[in-house]
Length: 320
Image 1 (cartoon, rainbow, N blue to C red):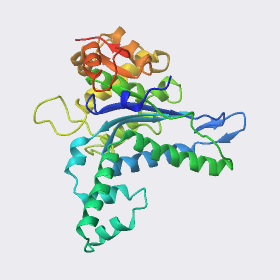
Image 2 (image 1 turned 30 degrees about the vertical axis):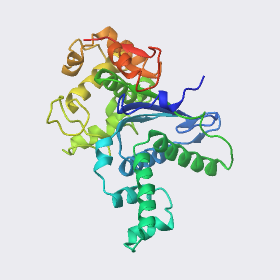
Image 3 (image 1 turned 120 degrees about the horizontal axis):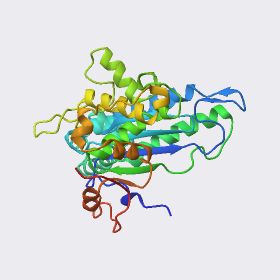
Image 4 (image 1 turned 180 degrees about the horizontal axis):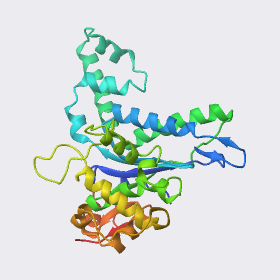
């Protein structure tokens, strides 16, 4: 049975979510269809470009993404502190990147004199848009509607392009976040589409590695790594980039040792810090799409009230 979004997404439970959308048609979302001998590779760029453009406008950060042949994965972070800091005119500018605004808001942006009633109404509209800029549902809607429209136009057909609404999973703690990100970034390796993370086209891990080679702080429009958690930590993913890349490389070798060589018995520091042993970590990374919540048992229990749920269900990760 389909669950209400309120039981799947709540920023009070966690700001991190793993989302997946799958194509409904037999024709490919991306990639090459051997049956029709037609290439859809260019559509990967459509999705990647739209995804990053939405991240620039919304106060929703992209932690990880991978664009596959008939589906895509994305790990998102709802940045409530960022949206609170934005002045009204910036909220309008961001929202109007993808929408037509009413005449009243256009007048506000032009600096026209408004009556008290018009000012109040304008403020109400802007506050609605402020809430939408941290809505994963709106974010995914604008992504999927655009891709469906472009694909239908190219295929010269109408009808549903996606299976249905996107699937989302709450990532309730650091373990869940690290596992989901590694799972997403390793999708092309696991599907034998690429031999290594650095050769995985249209993934966040490749983008991060490319920016690292250029000595850039972070890849464009991706949520940066902020380092180990501490009180004065800047806004970002709560581990170090090099730890994460080591983790991804180690995990990839274990899951696809036939492609990546021998198993490396040296665990990366992030793996040790999160308290995983090899067996538990690999089990998590191969079963990450099971359930609508991911976290330790204590994290799952703590999130139940915020997600309006009573039953303890989801993928349980080991405690420390």
